[in-house]
Image 1: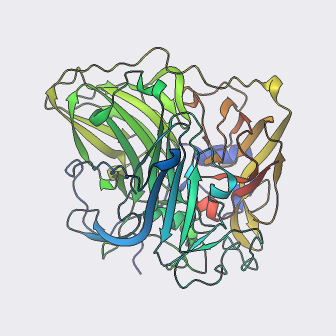
Image 2: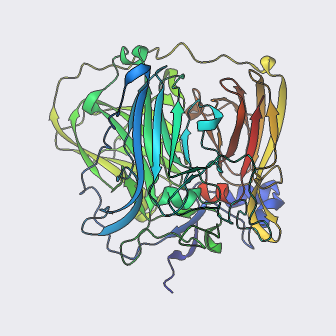
Length: 533
């Protein structure tokens, strides 16, 4: 059988991860395997790959509502399998929302509700989660709230197993299931922001996202529209995702059960996360986009399962363009923050402005990943095609509605460890020493309570909270980093790090989640229940 790994080379996303783990004495890390876990192992594609910067950058289509009466925009999306050309001249089977990867973009207005009816024509159950949405619990996409395809009569036995012996067949009796279709309601009562929707089925989130189940949901409002930021064709979604391809053009993924029906989990070399050797942006490999010599707003999402990036924008002559950050996961910052490069973990989003005004016409401007090597160092490129007028601006004040929670407002402080461990003799990823159990309540908070959470990591863990945004207060006792600015819903914990966050649990009562957004870690148990009462 062909060895798809990179000569058994462990891929480190941030240098020194192993040393940090060893220095911290994190015994849970050693439980994963004889070698300490790192961010992941890389699959190597078996088909010829195109040169970088030859494929045009696609822009996901904006979905049109099927109805707008009663102050609600109504959409319909069919989840279905297709075969599409991802690599030039190669046909690749995909699972999609509406037939495309990424799925269609939903454009929403702040305070105007949206309903989306999802129809499942895939061969397995699915769940839809609007990542970053302030969403009622019944529409949040709890991992056992399945949309069952035709022919499914029972919840698959693998649910609740996390690949652990002796745990199969568990099912939360409160799970809400439907047959073929399900309607999700998103109030959009939140700050304007770039959100994304993806599959969240228990134990099988990682392979489902890998096969294509992801799309964008953008919330806008009048105040943001009035700022004068780059817009129209000068506002670009940038969905970054790594993948690998088998000999026949199919997406390579080391699932224990390729049908994603019964046995969750991945082959042992990939327990720390699955990395691909092809960088896709908006579903295209290393694409190029023609731009004016003007400002552009880049709405960047890291939709990779496990790969971290450190993005830098460089010219032909080696000069670097500033990355002016205007927004984070949960919307606009109070004021712009300028970066030379910007780290972005799985599920994080950054709202950036890049100014091409002083770049000579004809220049190729490359976006590179400083953490990559070989083909994974390139991400995408922009070709400056022409001089053009530019009436956009980046105001010194972007938003005045950021929450001002203070430590003194917190009613309690909690601590959670995110570590590798063993469960029933198998490998897992645990929160507070426990794997996910949908029948167990891990944390109960009062509606409106402000809390401080201390999150402790062994290796890289991008930690995501459903329902709420939060502010990063500190990292290992030191001030937050520049890219921690603003309101976030995912924080990238580095190896051996303890980060503090503060949030207010407002919005809705019900059962939600917090988890690692390394999708393989999530599927292997690194998820916990949060009850808002």
